[in-house]
Image 1 (cartoon, rainbow, N blue to C red):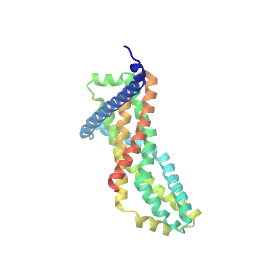
Image 2: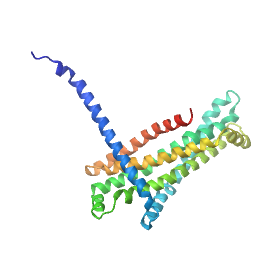
Image 3: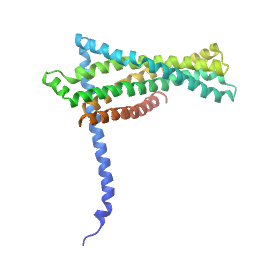
Image 4: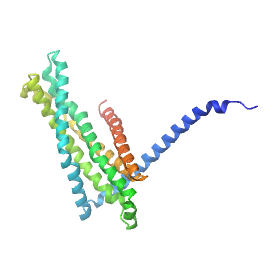
Length: 270
């Protein structure tokens, strides 16, 4: 007797198969990315060689100086929005003077590292993925290997070193601008004096908030670099593949920043 059970269960089996394939591919890509990270960390010992030093300086300029304009605008207006929204609610209870603490703590703990990393992921990370992806499809990576030049040391290590340095620095810069923007809004729209604002901000914010925020930024910088470089190295199918790798690098970076940011906050603020 032939029953119709195989046909009935075929969609379920197909869904399970697709999910299992998705999980296996994700685990494989995560493993390959960790291998790239490990090799790049080992190659940091060559950072003071003449060639590496020049490449790191170039990446520091691209990552830091060229991102200052966007970071300035985003950091300033993030603090202004936080101050306005928080102040409007606190005004109902006559506590608008406390917006200094709210803006300072929020910027240091969450918004500073997160917004800075999002900007770097969308600008610097996507550029990394596109550049390396173009090199892969044009066989420049293969040419480096033929010349016995390790691609990770030559391409990934300088970018990783630059992001490890610049992401915390840009985060601190964005946090300070956010606090300044909050002070401007508090003074001009909520009637909070500058002295009261900054006194309240420094009274309730502690060193731990700053250290955790900078630690987050440091981890985020590593994640953005490795995800973007791995996606670039995994590029196939020519120009279409370059665009696909760039899009994947930004999406995966955004999701990873959200998840890892929550995990770090949960570990240090129980």
